[in-house]
Image (tube, rainbow, N blue to C red; front, side, top):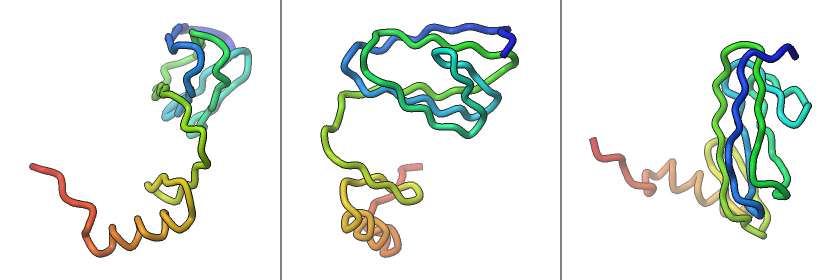
Length: 101
């Protein structure tokens, strides 16, 4: 990928790092990541170097490791399938609360 823009983002070693490529494509550690890709990185370093040939939009997130399983379904992220089923039921029954507006 011919580089046009470069960025280096910081995340302390030992944290779970993920990149959500919303628009465009980026290179991460020499590997191409296209639009709509979710990239999960190891926790070895303290920086992430990104390169893009054109404008790109990337959501960069990092957090302490959970050390437990992760199950996702639609917008829900829980630790078991049973919790996912309960979250869907709570959503359908409007038990998740509302946003102030």
